[in-house]
Length: 566
Image (cartoon, helix red, strand yellow):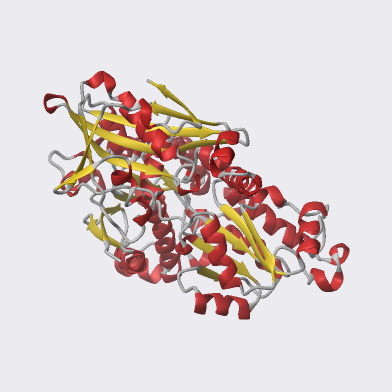
């Protein structure tokens, strides 16, 4: 895998150099080569404010700002003798810090900035009194964290790193190590730095759109307790109370992934009628048939079933995460399909909910309406396939779907979804160029660029935004360059890609463009897009493919109702 170079920056008030090495080594297997600028100790204000700034010269794509509240506030007056003066000074210093965060966001608009919130490391003296004081360090930190979230909400490129979440698996006493602090100004101990490095990796993977796409689930002793074929649907361990509630709580956490765009699938060796009956009718089930994009309930080996699921959903096998209680089944899938991510559940089902809640594979920095509807869309795709099996011919099937395709210019509201598509779409993607929200916002302001989204719906359902394109205009030469064209693979085979091209050409009619040129840049995953250009009348000339921009309407398949909006 060719490594992707990612410029990163770390600024802070204490030593975190070890975390840099941990993050770099952990992301290398994912093909990410982090190139770090680590600010000199406690020099973050100068780097954020100075002209010129070494920080700006580094042009990081990702930056972390880690400032401890103890360092920020320094020595404050006593909360008991001078509470008002203490709070006033704290508010002034925090206001200065929030000003730095705002300035950093303004000066690095194309950088994803992750700012640590405040978590006092040392125990407070007079803990009983401090619990009721608004001037204690813990109380000031709580107020500051609420204010910091308000500052972050002002900027699309700023997010808060909640340290309580980062260190949730650690005892409070294990977060810091006084020896490290007094020797080297290291606020965190080794275990805490491991947790922080893991979380930084999650943030970077989310920024790069490297999330997995499908969670494949076993049933017996995974989604419920017991073997349904032995005990029957009424005796499986699944309930609103008692030990069965652990399975129900785990399902609730899985549903949370579904509702933010993760696809769910079933892969179980089981009696299909019994298992489907429980999923459909058991009163304590949270996950129902409509939550699963694909199901394989049979006696075939699970690696083969997972391959079939990936094919059915038009996903790469490496985008699948497999959850099964059986060590044998996990080992077998690892052996036969090593690119599938196989995770080991805890031995005790009581630990299932917390374990599933902390899965690091489905992180995203934002979520869109299309994400929230993705699982439903795939269920609708399954219904289309079933309908297609009943049709007399492919054209009858496609005509019967009553497909409507809308090609529209991407306004500000659509840019996050368009950026998401550039980062996540790998298979039907002519160039696999990646763009951030900020990149697209900048291009959208240029008269030489046109940004488009395509959506589709039919009589079964609304698939939402399924693709996008970026076009650069050269009016002097009457040429348009198709910089990017991508579509979700799940809608291929219905002529929607052809209708999209027709809509793009229609959208260029007001520009005077006579020729559209395009590239196909092959990767190890986008072979499905290889024939798109020659199949649609493009002729290759050296590195580019050329096509007349005329006769756009005639391109559109007759079973598709094409609409274009400005």
